[in-house]
Length: 269
Image (cartoon, rainbow, N blue to C red; front, side, top):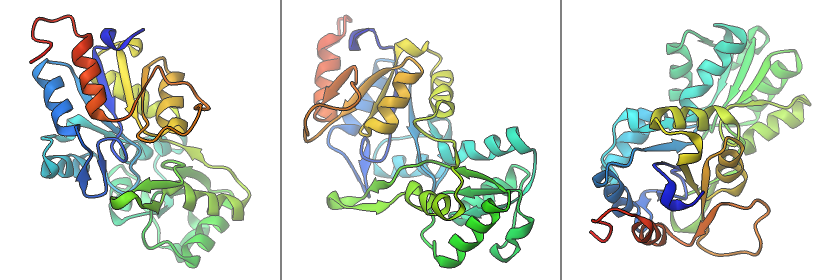
């Protein structure tokens, strides 16, 4: 399988399309070129703060027009994962207000942390207000038998100027350590998000490229479901532990390679 055979693209967001409040170089141009050539594409995000609607608005604001249907977020999949395993339940939502609202809209019943004993599940997303009280309530609930879900296990997510914020995984690890229970993980590298992206694109897995900057989530997960994997590696740091099908330094380089490999007459347009 080569880049020339790819018929649909799934792009990670944090660290691939954007970093903090800015698009990465070449992102808008590559997306626009793929759309002009009628290649289906979707943005496949491990986001645990915001769902697809908010992410689509942010893409549009930054210069890549997008609708909710163009984005698949782990944030949006966690409610279904809980429902598939437990039905509609009382739970603790350790995350943003948007996470609690999404779970409630799906039929679950978020509880205040002082009612942790009643929780049948604990869902951990990225939580800017995470503190000792939330950690105590979540870990006690899980240790008492509540089923533990994490939107993702990303330790960090990139923000502007090469900095990072602690990710959902950092908070989930704190709960897991205190409760001595490992979570059920919804996002990458687990298959649910990749399978949703493939279905949305309407291509077979081997004709779909997963483009991302995170070897452990984007590349490992994409390979596990048979996707063509493209690793965005701005600063090479030795031999990767997982081999992508293609490594590029930037989206500008990926754009150039895609144009060079196309068999269509307008390949240089």
